[in-house]
Structures are given as C-alpha cells and as structure tokens.
Image 1 (cartoon, rainbow, N blue to C red):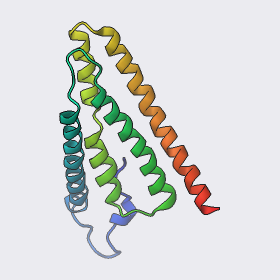
Image 2: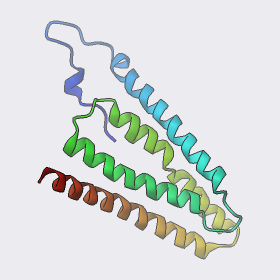
Image 3: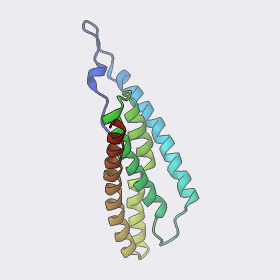
Image 4: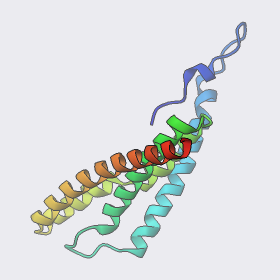
Length: 153
C-alpha cells in the first residue's frame, strides 16, 4: 500500500504547513489499529487450526491465500469504484490485511519443516503458497472487475 496522496496534505496558500508528524500520525494510528485487528484474526485462526508437527501448515497457507484474494477485491473496489477516504487504504490494506497475512510465519514454517527433516513438504509449501496467493489476487481482482462490469451494464 502507498502513502496517502500528498495533494490532500498541503496547507492552504499563505499558511505554514503543519509539522510532518501531524499529517502522518493519523496514518500510523490507523495502520496500527488495523494491524492489531488483522493479527488477532490470524491468531484466532491458528488456535482454531493448530499446526501439526511435520505437517503442512494449512492455517498459514489459507490465511495468506484468503488475505491475498481480499487484497485483490479491495484494490479494485478502492481504485475503480469507490473514492475512499485517505485512511481507508492504510487501515484496511496495510493494517488489517498486513496483520492478517503472514509471510514471516510462512518463512519460519518453511525453515521449521526443513529443520525437522521434511524438505519435500517445505518445498511444496514454498511453491504452493506463492503460486496460489498470486493466483488468488489475480482471480479475485478479475472476478471483481467482471462483476462490476455486469452491474454497470
């Protein structure tokens, strides 16, 4: 996700611009709040679907795939349909979905599988997550655009 549009942050002519921290503080706050929501949701999923020793990390896999699909839908909606408030993208895209998806756990899971003598599962997990997550973003964005075109017709 990108920083908010700087055009919206400029002070009116003849006035001193506000300090940088004042314009960025709301962004930092909504990213932190969204990240907390997303991380709690991910943690709840791992409690519901715990990792079995040496097994395929299904909870992390589906968390990343579903999160990527939601990112695909979200980006189409906020770029093609809805003129979102400047804090929606940092809150939901960077915060909630950034906290929900977990590519750091993905990397740790791969290392753990290799360390415990399951290199084939680790390699399958590595490849399947990347391919499936990227496919999920693409399919979700394409499906969202298709649905929106039908609604406009």
